[in-house]
Amino acid sequence: MIDRSFTHQHQNLWVGAHYFPKAMLMEWAGRDTEDARNALRELLNGTPPLSDRMHEFERRADEHLKQARPSERLNSYQGMRAMALWLGMVLPDQHYLYKATVATGFVERAGHAPLAKPGDKYTVMPSYYQLCQELRTVLLSRPDIIEAHRARRDASCHADPEHHLLVQDFMYFVSERAAPGQGRRPVHYWIYAPGENARHWDEFRTEGIMALGWDDLEDYAQYGTVGEVKKVLQRQEGSTSSKKNDANAVFDMANSVAIGDVIIAKRGLSDYLGYGIVTGEHYYDAARPYFRNCRQVNWVKAGVWPEEKGQIVRKTLTDITKDTDQVKRLTKLIGIDGATGSTTAHEPNYWVFQANPKYYDAAGALRAGAAKSWTVTAHQSKVRPGDKVIIWVTGPQAGCYALATVTSDVDEMPMDENDRAFVLDQAQVLKQKRAIIRVEHELSQHPISWSAIQELPSMADFKGGNQRHHFHGDQGTI
Image 1 (cartoon, helix red, strand yellow):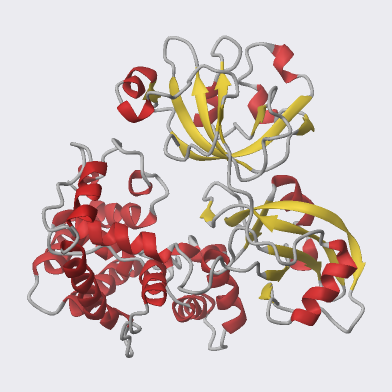
Image 2 (cartoon, one colour):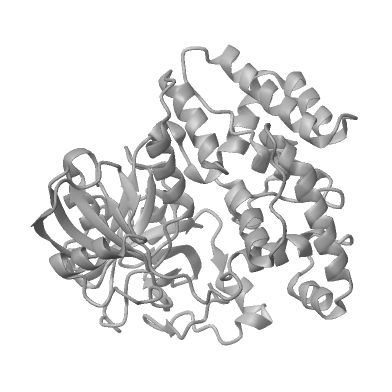
């Protein structure tokens, strides 16, 4: 039943193979169905307060995992965010989805009092539910907002009679906006170590990313506070040391670094190696062999610039924005052109990258994870890191087979060796101008067909089939 609840109809994160809360819950249910079922029943319908039920459910999940796999240090992933999802799916008119960064962002931007959080992390939930109820009361007085929200939902969506999804959407919208009076968030400057002694610098620069280790933590986005990260690190390493610097680096990578920020790469305590501009949000790539928590970065400049005043900070990721003297000094030393005073990275362009099945088996390459770059024959000067892409296969089975993000400028580069196996016309293998891409939604097993797209009024102007068609900021199409 759990597995059937996560259909592949909508191709969202929850149905993905790498959504760990679902995977671990399924593992639990497969090993001891009755134990998992009883734990879920208590979470959903138990009489104790919700915070107590959440605490008990996670305790049972962790305990089961320790007994089932005692030799491995694993995470059950049944945290507050996952439990809020289970509650919201089964009882959507009684519960609210929860994500710590969204709740905190909304509180800050709405000028609401901070959510109470004395001691146990689960005690935040009563305050969060009260906040949601207060927001719901306000939204119910705005029929225009209710109608606009209703109009955006189609027949496949939950009817939302109690307007709980409206509360969630509104909260998310506000949390993503700048705080009152602040305008756009200023650029932050970060000093970053691309591995011990910068051993991954060349690799990350080629891939157009920054990445951090602590891979046993898996997806950093699951942690709501620095304190949560610190406790898990201490438990995993069997240590009582503070782990403050490591925990801050992990939390900042997922939550504090932002698109448009300047990343200054360092080697050890003596040299700076270059700088780049963040062009993408945090993501977890389980397919990577190491350093799986990543962000897209357009590395602008590379070289070696020795630190002229003492030693470089030791930490893996450090925000130096408030040290304006150091920011000015490094801007001059490295030559960070035009970064000071800028606001954010460019707004992304939206493109269709096409594949003719007569010449290239795009579906096979996508399924194998081999599609790492794409030939760009038009608009080469306009395709930039951070742009969004529809991977479109032409022919009898025409449709959208993936959504991706560009992670490099267009340049002459050879096709990836693994990708060549899917080329049916070897002329395509010749060195030519390409852009590196990162596939974010792989849809080849269930592509969005051209016939289905044509039935949508909102897609009437979609130009599938036009080579490298440029969508002028058409985010809605993506």
